[in-house]
Image: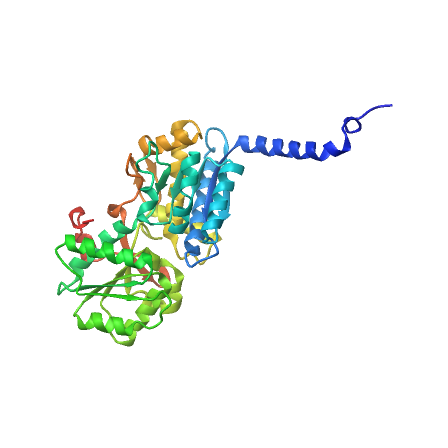
Length: 404
């Protein structure tokens, strides 16, 4: 009688062999691909819009790389995780991406707090990370003293944004009276600290500094104090939903100074709560807008096919550029080894044309920030979309104006 392989294998062992075969098959498939991970909030917090936009930029960059033949003769595969804005979930995602999915690098996250919660994981496991959204200064600084820092960024560092906002404010004010108002969170109060220090570098001091709760809906009393102090220019440091309430409070007391803010004002809560017309009053920092250059126009059109309500194009652009820098490093290194990739990003990544700009030696030892104030410009809402903002002041700004 013919004996089959199954007859010779004890029945209890068959499931184990099936699992082993499946695992071997997955490992073989993984070995044929180069995997990039994406870990960011896409559903959990007010910053999720940034994460969704960043994910689409990530996906489109991988599509373009594969259309051009992939990397090292292999297809690039994106492995996407939603951390829902929660540090424990973000930590879990990073562990899975690195240990189970065997990614060569990770792009993310959206929220600075999540990055700060898991930085030790890629650093210990020697897997490069490029942060395309989160802005906290400490993200790229924590391991700056190590032999190799594995954390890089293509986003707008808070202090760099402040340098631009203050440079504009000191030229925009007609009476040299500038005021600050910020939310009461650590984000807002750190912003006040940066604003105060940078304004001092220009030989000036705020005539008023006020705060509000992130859930407040009426800021008229704080604004009345700022108005009575004579400020004709106001810098607000808060998130889009609260800033929308601030704009509504300005309208209530008919006090509409030149108003500046950070890139968080690109989120739709500002537009939806304040309304299209009122939202146009605040001018904010960005690295790019949908109409900044032909590359931005082209990418925005592609992203909108998948995400018609795209409010935060800048996150898509910065994520796209992050992937392209990783691809350039893989090509130059000729490897997906984490140590080689990190060293190449830091010392030898070739010139890479991105959406935001042409990246020429974007990183260096002790400086893992690909973007600085010199790369930023101002933008504002126009007809429900974020558009680049220019006036006589922006055109007159020089590098010497960006004190930090």
